[in-house]
Image (cartoon, rainbow, N blue to C red; front, top):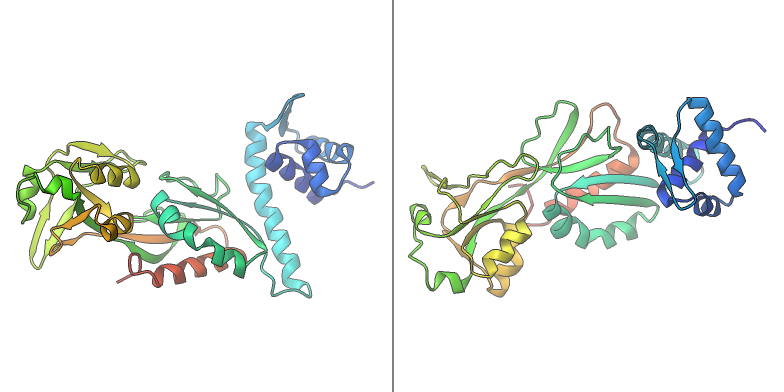
Length: 305
């Protein structure tokens, strides 16, 4: 039988995804000996070892992990090409790997995923929520949502929203704290600082009102690199926190946090959808991008001004 490179790539990718030759064979409706032979032939063709095999588990080599990321993209492109010329050409299908900051994923995207799944049942999402700034091509990521200025010239960036901020504190803190009627009073308060996880750089909140500007550079009581943790500490009464408004919203609505200095505007950060400049935006990724853009546009906590 002639060697089918695409089928071998599918077998290899499935083994990586399920972690077992047996489970991969079952999901592909093939004999275990068949996919074992396909992977062996692929390794021979490439002249590298793709998998570490033991009696207990299967894992990728460094070369295998890199090959998997690129092979999955190739297979998805083939699947999309086939769908575009088939009788069911309107069905958008395939796998999308997405990276996004935790607040965006937890507070905005995840609660609305039932809508996406119902509308696009043949698109399968793999969502990673963290604060890393990764190389999308190197890690096989189709697109990412980024908060802040995007300076990477290797990425196409589409502005889709804004992350707004506010200063908040628990009523239990405010009842025993000094007055807080102006930004300069923040120096007399315990406040909770934030460092960006990717750079460990401190965020200096800026407040604006007309021509007035104030940047808080007073040393904080404690630093956080996670908005949910900072919100929890603020609710517990530790001090005044500078939080994403979307993070604070549920606490503000039930009264466990109170907004302070509300007559001052806080500097916000842009929210963008980015993807590698070296790749055309596929139909499936475009579908997710358009859905996310519409979702943000309808949400007053995230919508562009």
